[in-house]
Image 1 (cartoon, rainbow, N blue to C red):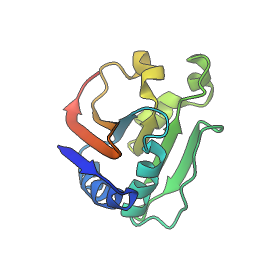
Image 2: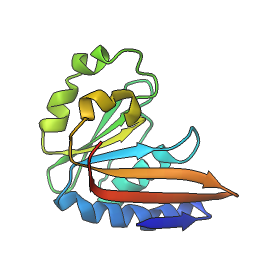
Image 3: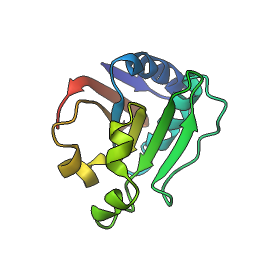
Length: 142
């Protein structure tokens, strides 16, 4: 699926479509350059779930945990500042992936060796002439 948006408020529609995929997927990988809107899309996704939590960037903490109305959790990762893959082991990254809860991962290319073979939804955001082109591929593998 491909979305072209000109205004960040349109992310709410994209987020609604992605939340529909939560029933059969729990790993969502967000690709895009700095400033493309990955964190903003993650916040829109959290909002679309009906969560009362307020999203913030996990850039310095690597992961933020949010509570969803269905008693599940959403884990939002930002791996941009990851210096060494062993840092993921230190925070229990495998346990998050195996928890059955939703995992949104920004900058997943920094952990592709760990994610290799994991079923996921790949979300790509590209900037083009003042617009954001958002694509997502369901049931893709790295």
